[in-house]
Length: 62
Image (cartoon, helix red, strand yellow):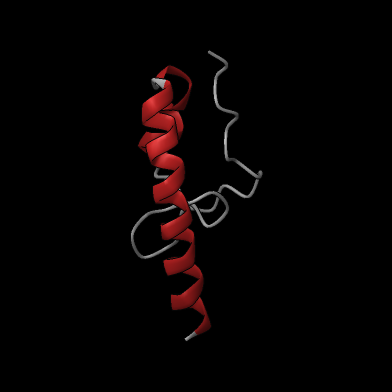
């Protein structure tokens, strides 16, 4: 099975209140573990990242 491509967009700014990257939504730890994660784990994280980015963007808009 093909590895999931990293969601990184090259922003790498972890200044959100929850420690999530403002570019991709991952934590520093998740970024470090990405290459070794199983396909099901990366898919689950991808779904979570979408939710995180929505939350982060909503809190910045307020």
